[in-house]
Image (tube, rainbow, N blue to C red):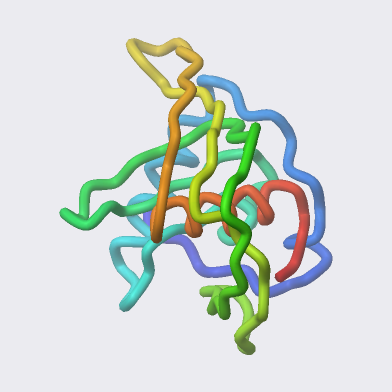
Amino acid sequence: MIKELVKDEAILSQVCEKATPQDADVAQDLIDTAASLDDCSCLAANQIGVTKAVVVYFDDDQQAHVMYNPKILMGLGAQKAVEGCMTRDEYSKVTRYAKIKVVYDELVDGAFKQRRRDYTGWIAQMIQHMVDHCNGKLV
């Protein structure tokens, strides 16, 4: 279901609770909401008012990818970037890693399977932005 974006910093600055397999509907709401927005590449659950650690991003082929409870284990190649955000009006200067190692849960047949993957470039930058959201960090 398409949800309204939340711009309330009191909600966006909360550390998100750990997601469970029962949060699959939150993931679908994120996909639906992000797909309905112009120029939206990724969203975190707190951006639609749900303080759970669930994020979605779209790859270059517009395929949606959901991560539950993402954590960045390692980052290499720190670089400066300027980012926009769907729930913030201004752009922010941030430091992002060119390559990251992430551990996250994926929902498979109704249960979580832990995954560990490396990401680079634009997708790595989006994931770092969304993990910041899960941690209640406003860029």
